[in-house]
Image: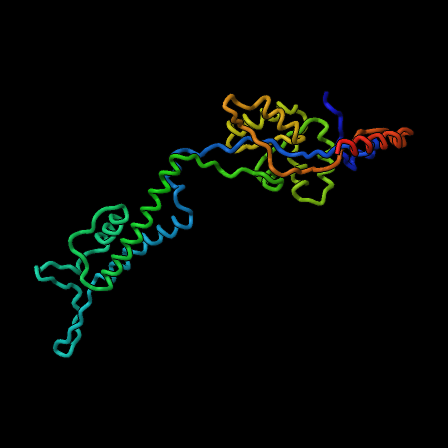
Length: 292
């Protein structure tokens, strides 16, 4: 048997009174679980956004710094005038200072991708220190990326899912409820909470619990830019999710939000000024005392 209970809302007290509260219920949302992102996006997951931005900045800045440190400027005094000699020849007659920014950029990107350095290394100590620091940086980033990439391709990473009231109302486009939800909607509109007022604006009455959960599942998967949730009592939602939407392997496309939006007492509705209210209240108090 299903026990009849009504949540004690002050908007309902205009029509009828309540007996002594005998239970507490909590209302929440049933939502479709966020879908896994495409597999190719796992190439991006191994590093955080800040690491990607820092790495890109280093790849853009490093060729310029390397170019300035490897180009030698030699000033010689001849006939009381300064002469600028940019190129420095080695013992074999090769112009080592003539390497352009393109060749240096190719060297930087190549070592970052795991390629070897060219045979000609810069002669200055500052250039050698800079190259060594870059090789260490490229080794660390490459090792971390390859290690995390294996985990990202092996273990699926689910997007974060909304659990609280504020997260849900900012995430979904519509919240369905059974027809008696009009009383909840009215109280939400008169609430001092902006999140509850936002919930009242996106609520739609009509479908049953199973239909609302089914719509939340189908619309969230077919219309990727439209998200829907269903509002009802926690035990009822958990029951129907387990009964109608749980697969043979125990998984379900739906879940129940962690936060309860209307935790409160529930009681039997009775007419105003009912003569039997004192006797009914005393019975409910005894029942509650013995049930505890």
